[in-house]
Length: 100
Image (cartoon, rainbow, N blue to C red):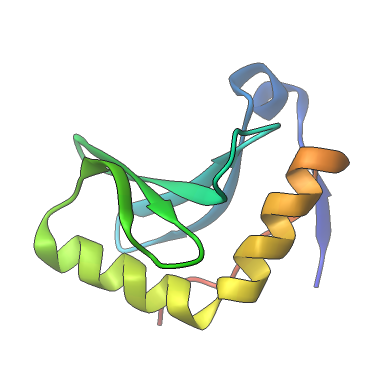
């Protein structure tokens, strides 16, 4: 697994792209507030998803996209939590395999 450090551009945006699949972009913000969560962009839709329960924290996604995101997240929950902790402390993160 390759460890990434946030680039200057990502630091300027304060976010790290964690994964991308089927037009869905998963990212986390650097030094984010609790509870642990990740962000999703799909076309004009935006959402925040809780890592522990995969509940919708904010925003909205089409039902099929939300289902795909939850399927992906359930396969990578521990990696998401590792990234959450690392981004908050060191700014390092690992890209996570896309949904296949």
